[in-house]
Structure formats: C-alpha cells, structure tokens
Image (tube, rainbow, N blue to C red):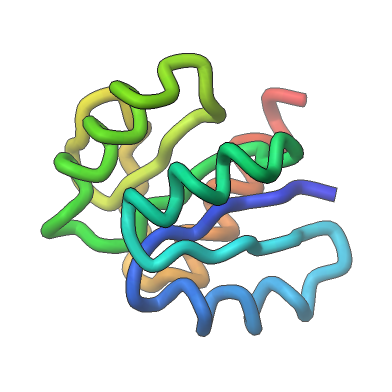
Length: 105
C-alpha cells in the first residue's frame, strides 16, 4: 500500500479516485498547514503531492522548513525541495507519483 498526502482543493476528488486502486491510499489536506498536521499524526505517509501550481513553492517551502526529514514532495512546476510532476490532471499526477515510488522501492 502506498499512502499519498494530497494537498489542495482537488484533494477530495483525488481521494475518491485513489479509492478505486487497491494499492493506493490518499490522505487529504486543504493546505500546507493542514498537511503539517496530517504528517504529524500519520507517519505512514510515503509522499506528499501538492496539487496547486500557484501555491506549490510556498507550500513546499513550509513543509520542508517544518519537517525537513519528511516524505518526498511532488508538485506541478518548480518548488524548492520538491520533484516536479508534469502531468495535466490530479489523477495523472497521483499515478506518476505512485509510479516513481514503485520504481524506488
């Protein structure tokens, strides 16, 4: 099971998509502050997927500053400390992250 913390407005929709895949669990957060709270309470999170391109840099910076040893970050577009995802939809971004994590493991 791969657990992804999806951060942003589209996170709830992504959780529904993830529930259709038995090897993926999607935990949601509305913003970076909420993500920090989720990370503090759930150490099983394998990666953080920031969904908002416009807020990606600020969210990644906050997450890395507050939790430098946290799981890898992924974002659409350049963001400090995050791997860039070039997929067009949140669903494609999720599958890209899962694919990258599967290759690493």
